[in-house]
Image (cartoon, rainbow over all chains, first blue to last red; front, top):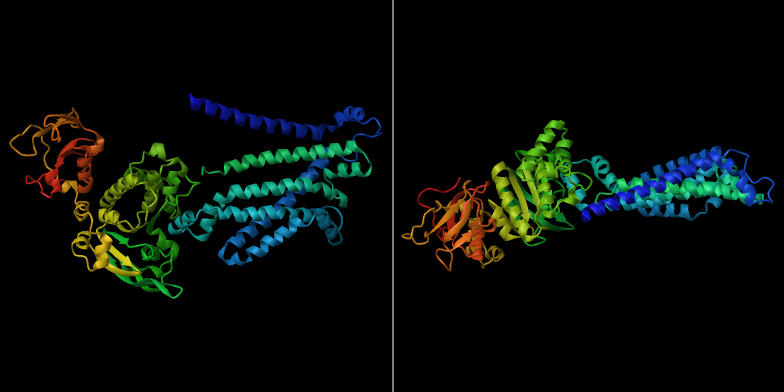
Length: 255
Length: 355
């Protein structure tokens, strides 16, 4: 009886989680495609503004450009971060661990705006400097969690893997990575969420993103633009976070 | 067959294993024992090269282990450790299949082998195949750990204090099972422990180490009756020598025909077993300390099996206050009985000794 109740409430909780995620995804897509339908609402909220709906680019374009920025910079952060984390946990790279950790930490203490200012003279305006800034900024959580995740694999498990005749490569991809995956994904999650927010400042150097209406609104004193940009960025971040949460759950093994 | 020849391991100028030489024949159950820090674990790990040796040689069935590719060597040697080291993200079946997978056996061959091993350890395949290590009890996990080590039918099985982390009752069950598995598979086993009772229970050969040196290498009985020096004598312990001897004797050597009729003429035999239709004992009449004809219901806790040690049989007699235990087979059928005469070392005259 108790068991049935428990599984029932677990079922409800899972279903509720799906429900929230579903509603948010619908909301995100609906607002991206149909922000224009809300023009009367913004007109009513901001009667002083002559043009209360951002219309220099479609929100779908901005959303796709934003996702593109985050995707590419996160791909770089994850590739470099996981590779660096793996390198410093292997016997050959162990002595580089403190150096790599502090480099990554420096990368994160640097404000992305400052990185942009340095990157623009080197890489020009637009897409490239934004990718550089975002990739650097997102590196630290990935490296840290890769090192931490690999560190959680019990010594006895590793000894058993070696004792059963697995090669280094087999130990890494059959035992260490699967067991570290939950923690590594948690790091990627933090990195991606940070970058979804930070990508907005790319608009200051001309990279198209959801930051474009935000910056335009701030510069032109148009609160409606700011709200439209911020709403979509916020929703995107929440939806992404929930998706990562479900991914992480797949890699928990009981104990 | 494993030969250790002048095996030495040096850490920071100190010999933690110092010139150890011994030979373990195929099918023997060798136990390395000694106080902590005596080098027993290090010796074991040099056999599968988890620890590189400093000098000396290890010959496994004619091959010098240092001359084989290390992964290939380890796949020829089963390895079971304390707290199992099971892979937490793999099911029981996947864990057992570790080495066959590495050896690229076909799927059907692996499935058959997993079923075979689960049967050997009395793990119900339908129930346990798809369970994960965190869903197992300590004893079950340890069985899976040993099954994994045996999966690819290795030439030697190395066990590093495999039962050190389980509770005493489970440990005794696992020890009895290990003895049965050893008899059934005929594997050569090298087993590390610091527990003399465990060593006496399991070993056919015991190597006692101290400070990295081999002190005595002998059969368990010899170690007890002919210790080479005071260290051996002390390590075995003067206490309970009689009981230790009993732990090396098995019920099947001393069991006798079960008494199915009251026979007051023979002392100690004035009792009878009452069986059910399937031949399982349900009750014992007599042979209690208090009342000769009292009927005692048979409980699994005070039955014996032919593989049980006489020490365990005696312990059950004392605890349950019965002078005779029923000896049952795997189906629970009464095949013999074991009484105080057996404890005293009197073997049955009528040739009812078990297999």
